[in-house]
Image 1 (cartoon, helix red, strand yellow):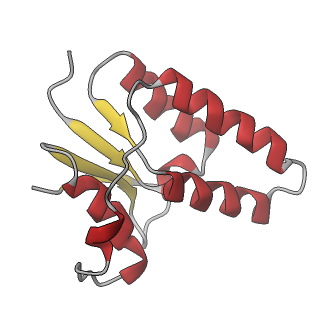
Image 2: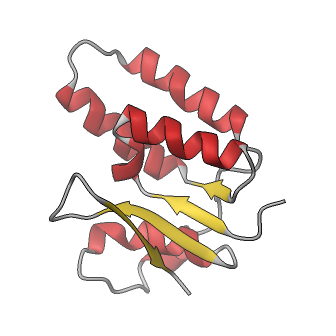
Image 3: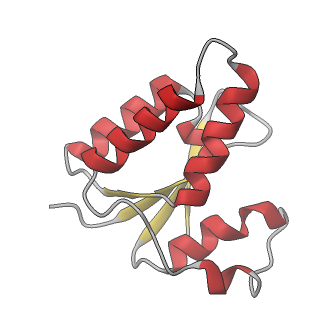
Length: 124
């Protein structure tokens, strides 16, 4: 059983190989993976903006499969926290709010200035 939880930001769900890798780690119960409907909307919007060969229907199917593969993956009830949070990038407040709703959370997020590398930042 996993002892900690990671909230996946949209930027780590956008690249399919990384999304697949992170989902496989969570399915192996190395940690509990979480995300929100808002995070789903962000990565799907970004993919559709860059990949004309993919349809919204295809990505909605991916979204459904992700939600089915990871028990209790969707964080809910975080929305009221967003406005009270301050971050250098205000667009990230919803991710922090989702993380606050969990205990022992880390946030999986790609580095904004090094898109080829990934880091884990403690949210405790």
